Amino acid sequence: MRTPRYEQIAEKIVTLIHSGALKEGDKIPSIRQLSHELSVGVNTVKEAYWRLEDRNYITVVPQSGYYVKNRFNERVEPSEQDLKQLDPKKVTFCRVYSMFRDNAFDKNGISLALSGVAPDLWPKKRFGRYLMDAASDNDLLAAEYLLPPGYTLLRQQIARLGLSAGLTLSPDDIIVTNGCQEAIFLALMALCKPGDTIVLESPTYFNLLQLLQALNLKVIEIPSSPEEGISLDTLKFVIENHPVKVVFSIPNFNNPRGFVMPSWKKKEMAWLLEQSKIPLIEDDIYGDLYFHRRPDACKSHDETGNVLYCSSFSKTIAPGLRIGWIAPGKFYESVIEMKMLLNISTASVNQIAVACFLAKGGYERHLRKVKGKLIENVQSMRNEILLHFPDSTRVSNPSGGSFLWVELPEPIDTEQIYQDALAENILFSPGHLFSLQNKFTNCMRLSASTWNLKVADTIQILGRLCKR
Ligand SMILES: Cc1ncc(COP(=O)(O)O)c(C=O)c1O
Image (cartoon, rainbow, N blue to C red):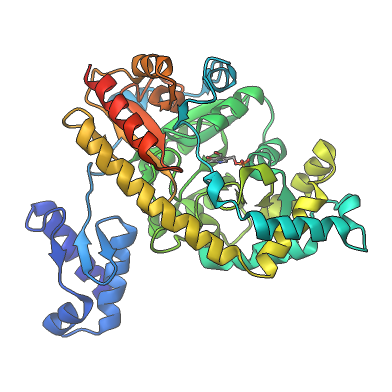
């Protein structure tokens, strides 16, 4: 079959980037200009540029044009060492929670460890009104169980929001949960039994590792590239060589690395897992925090209900609401049964208030505000890190979400810096927490949910500790 023209154009640009003819930060011709030069339609060039954006080669700067993107690492192929480590590991030890639970950290200190919506963005007035309305409504719904799958109006609104991620869900496909964490928990409970093996991209969200420990599951970590996510070649290898029960992925604004898996890769992964009859748990909690364009969900490529899609409003409205959801595809019956068994329902008053916020307006404007702040915060924090951290420190450059993943020159050990920072009342997440294999010891994850002078000073202090 002939390669489509837009693919040929995209490939040509990739070759120019790989050969060094086009360098990071170089402006590439506008769509109109290239369409004129190559005598092809504007839409063909547009399609080529979209593909390059998806593959993280170029980025668009509004009202300026397209630029070659900062790809601080070429695609990572698994090393021999990585392949040796592709054996299931029993999760036995995860100190994360003890760190956050300990009273070691003074509440007046600065925590860059966890992400959440900055408290000053909480839509106090509007949300307060919806909570009051929900509590005083004559139907007294708020005083009842809103049993699974949950409040219909809320599920309708969640289905509407999903359209931007390419999801065509019906409200009947969705089950309301207590946050995304419960959604993941329900998915795991429905799919796995103790001793089963789960595969995930590495590094990964440490709370998940803790959960896998509690469920007595074994874990295979697959290397991920900082810009494209999980290595599909390694995933294939693992699936062929191990009895894998389920795969877990955070493909959009990944926690901790911030990458977005390109759309073609999501499609390939969804297809591969479908063929192998291995369900995929997709965590898309950061998907709506895009700075420019909403990336699609893996589930948008799922034709048979093999993907269990999990998300919540914890990163967009407030984590304290504990409103999340799961679209479990063909595993709907097992998941809903598990939800009933676990906690009967999710708080009714919160379900109703969130539904009103989404239906009566205010949410989109609120989200724009949250994202506007995040764009500024992430850039400011990134600049400050590059200024004050040791030379050759590498910092992710995410196009959404709220985390920065910082790779310090080895042999700097961020566990040591963590201890030193704690003594200065600063908390961050050291890299080794994101793996069970003693990897990423030179890395740290910083949350840019909040930015102010105090946080800027904190980055300077961290820089000083790293240099020391
Ligand atoms: C990737 C990821 N998934 C799930 C969660 C948990 O979300 P929730 O607070 O909605 O349970 C978090 C929270 O930080 C997260 O980063």
